[in-house]
Image (cartoon, rainbow, N blue to C red; front, side):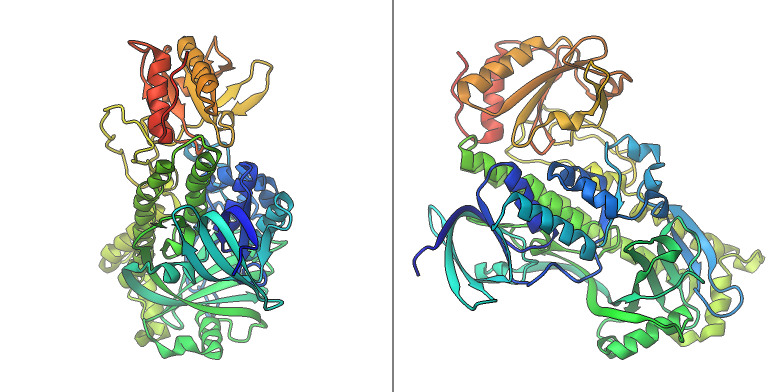
Length: 595
């Protein structure tokens, strides 16, 4: 079949990761085509949490404001809570514990200190149409739904894909330099022979998306996720509001998650799942319009490889894990943020092909940790149920008796009460995992180590400690432009460009950066930041406390806002020569020495 179209990058898959890749590549000037076998964006009401780093990326893509307009109001996603039942007998619906959730809707100063963005919540069924609309505006005619990949081959210089237009039935061939596989693993890994490694199956879950009025029983306007131990059925039920116009207890739509043992045949019947969910909630006679019912396993898998020559796996094609912690979609979007600037740099000739070798070493350890954390989050919820001894075989009265020990003052119940409360507090490992979401660091050939040891974390999951050690994300600080305008330090890093940040006395480093940029044609900017002197000013000394360099030191930041190199102080020799060597390492190509 002759080639009908040629693009630099072919994106296979039109979910959150694929559409974000399209928007980022458009911003980087990369000619690309996105195809999706599905006729429309997903109708699955899942993947609703967008953490701060992800919102930063979506801000890069130009779509963050549109998402914020539609997402859950911050005050209605400030907490998560555990309940003893939902409706039914007197006392059902009792609050067992309430925890702050993902930065407490912007109120947690630790989260505010980590990013200029705040956490958002927008279900996939409402998020993806927003992403698609924006991607189509940026690349007209280059975002094609209902176009399915049917074959894929690779050569030394390019890849070739056969695509079927499912509307017309016609096929066409697309030649490309690289392929981004964001198809959830449905097609591309199989064509390449890439298998998956499982981290274990915990349980299986049925999910109902429905329109229903639960405002009579749903309490606590600030709660996003309700975790309910049902005395009626002895099961664990999760309620999640879906909006779209109202949130909190008055939400028009809801998602109901109900767990089943692995291979339980009851989970296969839509009618049975609906009956079980309503019974577990104690609202058997509720008028509910069911939109979809889906089944999925609470497990985690990683692709055996994230790359096959010219093809890169991202998102669910590379890793899949439970929704506990909200790390799935966010991980996929962060995959493409890591990859897209590298593809653009190689295609533009600013970097050598070796830069692409850093994708898997950087992303795989991060998503493996995310997958493990997601499993552990799910297991913690099961552990609470085990402590409370809630089980289907008990019967309603016995389950209620057992759950009641969580608040009983009887001496005989003291140990169970303490264990249950501790296990619920431990859910902060899921809803306050700031270091998992924001504090991860990379190790690869696209970074220049400075010999400093990896820091011992104060607390590995919940406490994020900003650092400029190579491989770490650029710490957040608000700066002053000198004209009274406030700017986040992240916004100094422009798409596809490296940034050298020097201290207030680091003018020689900035001069050297400009020399390297001019002589080598490297997209490299430079800026000094200080409290009294510089190109930008540090009014609260936030950057001073976090920069970990002296006034005459410098650091180099990659386009994805990860620190690539740093010099604590001035250069012992020629700073332009040292920067040339650094840029060569980071970009994986020879750079002509500055004149």
